[in-house]
Length: 119
Image 1: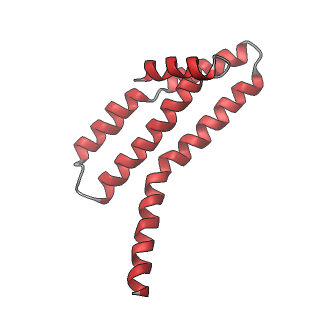
Image 2 (image 1 turned 90 degrees about the horizontal axis):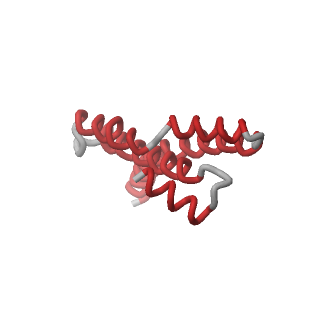
């Protein structure tokens, strides 16, 4: 999946920035957050399955090693601005997407409570 995403990103967006790695890391962060949120707040995903999905499957999709390599490659060719953009965007966007499922669940719960109060 990572290889396919990287190839499509190069074809559609070009080779000037590691878009493929950014995409799989953001999607993987969101899916890890979603699996964790569902697994921790309900009985739908047993703990062993949750760990298998997040560490095994999603951990295999996301890739810190590619992120590190591509960032260092950008720095080595003198593209310091793009290297820093890659670090900052990847870190910020992955953190936001990793937290998004929990925030969505909290918002849904608050709206449900508010609806009950107002009814």
